Amino acid sequence: MTIPARLSVVTLGARDVGVLRAFYRSLGWPEVPGSDDSWSGFLLGGVLLAVFPLDELALEAVPGPSGPPGAWSGTTLACNVDSRDQVDTAFDAAVAAGARVVASPVDREWGGRSGYVADPEGNRWEIAWAGTARFDERGALLSFG
Image (cartoon, rainbow, N blue to C red; front, side, top):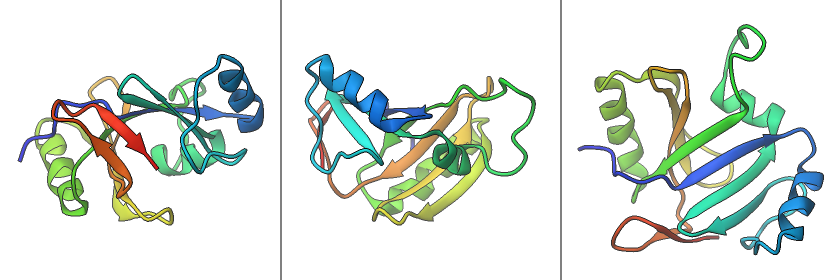
């Protein structure tokens, strides 16, 4: 299996989710169901912009020693796949293509499954499945929640 050519989610690690959430809401961007001051999402033209606590995002995307200051931007990109099982096969395909394992796939408390890899420049990609994500025939995200 190859990894689908889709960018599903850009996650911003926030020091204050409530403040960042209010900013994006003030732009008139509609939130996805289930958003609150612990996590928020905005569906933008086929990609979800997620706002998530920076410290919690770091636990998933940068496990272990944090490295030198500025080594991680606080942003992750996600490629959502169509089934729970595809997370592992897509993850393995990314590693075979040269990605570095950051965190192997696990079932998440929110009901999905995901793992993290780093591309050759260190950008964090989450390979994920969320049962609530719906895509069109091109792979654009239609709904999330």
